[in-house]
Image (cartoon, rainbow, N blue to C red; front, side, top):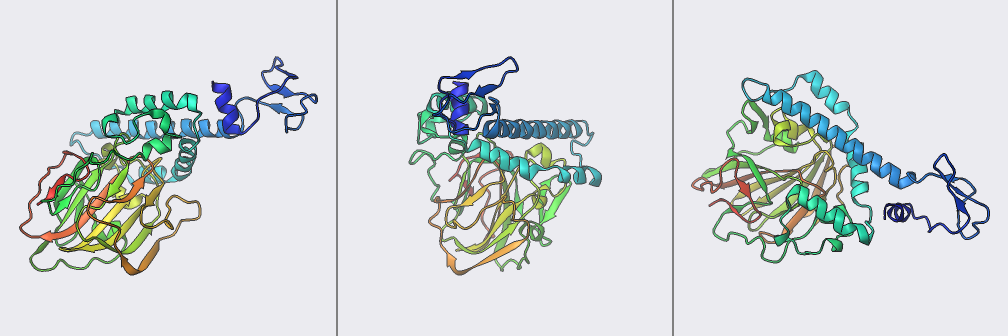
Amino acid sequence: IAFTAGMKMLDIPKMPSGISVPEHGCLWVGTSSANLALPEAAVPLWSGVLWSGLSALLAAISVFALVLAYTAWRVCSSPEGTYVSTPSTVRFLRSLPLRWVSRQTGRLASLQLPLLLRGVVVRGYAWLAGVDWAVCARQDPREYSSLQDFFTRELRPHARPVDARAAVVSPCDGTLLRCDVLGKEGWIDQVKGCQYRLGELVGTAIPPVEEGKKRCFAVIYLRPSDYHRFHIPVDGLQVHRRVHLPGILLPVHPLMCRYVDKLHCGNERVSLESSWAQGRLWYVAVGSLNVGSIRLAFDATFGSNLPDAKHFAVHEYKEPVRPGARGDELGRFHFGSTIVLVFDVDAKAQWCASQGDRLVMGQALLA
């Protein structure tokens, strides 16, 4: 099975007769193999795309594990429970080729799996991550052509009912890390003792709040096992501007948020400056290690973590884009990541969820 899968990914025909395996372990293609469109050369089994893909996967897993283990040790060993890394440590993390690792991981995850392996690979990942199969639209793991296809899976109809009584609903499945009212200075809490300004996150000037309104924020972390698509959280959403802010791709696990100051402002992200019935709204999708790819359902021209996309870019829509109704898909991550939602709402609105709650798309945030 492994040999057949490797040959399929390498796009090499099955080996005809006339092939011998010498002592050094390479497959030699003899001149008698007339039907094989390869030069007379040694063809190691672990070569080409297969070797590159496995190397990228091992590199990504190793980097992520080492960074997360070190972060967990520093956070847990801190007497205050929160440790902010030193500037030299942040510079070291920024020097790691995490964008390249994320691109290679994405390529590996997008490789077409042989039909015989799909059930084992997809179901094995789902079991390890704790995925809820009951809400998946495709119940048979063999229907997913790749791991990427499974990461971006769709849900069954009505699996996530949208609360019609709420003013704002959760845009995605995930853990509500922080939620509060934004102060006059525009500070968003990453963790206790670590803050960043809304302007730093979205990269543009922030207008004041209208009278009778308040500006709230919610930070939602998507685990690798979560549903990876994000949706429209309000009625009458209109997108006026798309801002792409390239950056690094550090993990956005809650432990890392307690370790690196202004983590969300350093990672690559896309901000959708929008409006709705009660005021302004900023919808920020933050990339993460192995999650360099962010896609928007209403704008096929946008792509993230591209080799040539290294500069701050603002795209003004000629006319406000109405991507759909509340609950409709707005975009997707190609793995788990973070959504930061900032919005104006009536001053009397009350939170329906608390920090640390597990949310599902469509669940009430404010009412």
